[in-house]
Image 1 (cartoon, rainbow, N blue to C red):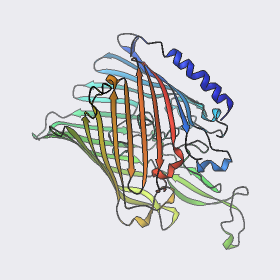
Image 2 (cartoon, helix red, strand yellow):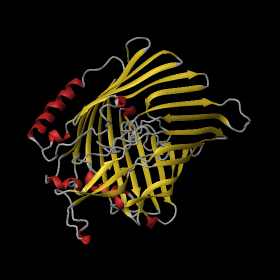
Image 3 (cartoon, rainbow, N blue to C red):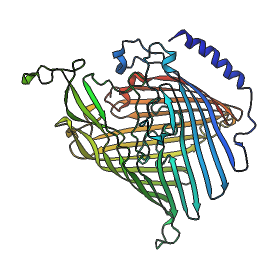
Image 4 (tube, rainbow, N blue to C red):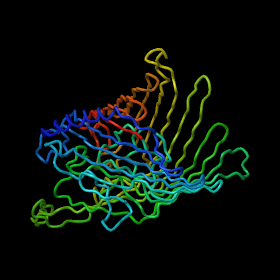
Length: 500
């Protein structure tokens, strides 16, 4: 780590401690009766506490000390001139100092979410180490039982821990901290330009269904895939061979849409869902060879051609259809718990074809589901550190692939399991009347891999809070997309946030 890293820490931390003594007058600032804004200023530092990321070994550097050094400024503006109309915008300014503060990290693009320069729809300006953007911008309209939202927005239909079963409308920006943030997907779900609406159906012939409603959305062309870290980034997931030339296939301009029907039957609230999407995960498809005298290999030597070639593949995100179901049921005394179920069937989930390697993509029906139990429980005596009730959550996830799993390949062309399961336990325990809390998440992959994410937070007054959290990953299951494959990602984080 460069010496100026220590100088910067020595300078920045006391400065933040000093200004932490000042308090804002209001949590939300009203400029007029109709216009207000809120937001936060945050600095986050992640110390690398594991071995070197093997995907960056090609750069010949020593193990890095930092995985993240980033500052955030977010302002949420709300204009509401009447009860039936609202305009909302979320403006974010972000600066990344990770590779500047650590000598062992090469320069990389810390903000790779991008579109062609003539496409204004991202509403952003950025370089490799900063970005200013209008993250969300939409208008809400209420017409009695009809509600509409038009603009750049997040569409959240799922609510499982660490899993996106029905929460599939928006892709993720995993380029800077994966899903390791305490908020999980909230700050990394990429908003799309969409039309969304819901309608409460009061007149219908089904007397046994209450609160019947229908909701739908249309994304007419703002299709963005999940964004992974760039080559050289601390969390870089892949080390593609130099002879591989990847052609990114752009799905922007294509259409995504979804509809769900919801209602209450007895004590169970449920939804039926359908979504037409483009898969977040890409599949490689072989396109041919091209001469490359720098990084090429003599792939055709067996045919007498000693020319060094690069292998050309396209990175494709295929269209899929998702059929989903969700159920919520509150158990009364003495259980006092809420049971949630989410399931999704994708009949055309794309995988690599094991019979032809990179030359084909095979569709295979895939079923995903999760069951979660939530319960507020008084674990610690109220007199002990003024403890409130602890929120306990247990969750079981399973993925099942139809047919013969030997015919398909998973991420990174790895062998695939017909079934995969994870068990999740999460708790949050407030202390001292909510001024502190401790929390932890534990996810266990039954094929022997796991993730542990402990957290401690302190609230100083109404506007400042301080987080310390960590991520530990391990296990013998080291195939791509499993926790054990990111054994090098253990990180200890510190966050300071001024919220207004």
